[in-house]
Length: 80
Image (cartoon, rainbow, N blue to C red; front, side, top):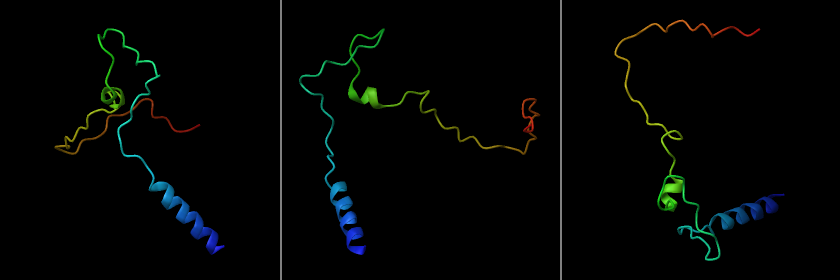
């Protein structure tokens, strides 16, 4: 069994080592990207792959200045 485990491990290492690090390129035969409504030009690949504000909101690092009681939540009901 240990020989099989070694072969599987070797295959995984070799498979992980063959990854391509280059930028993605569109095929020459592929249609150009669709122009979004209200835009004059299609988006670049960087614009298409970067998340918008709703998908990745900004982080708020504001600390509490003093200890405060939480307000009561009318909808925080115990399970039935």
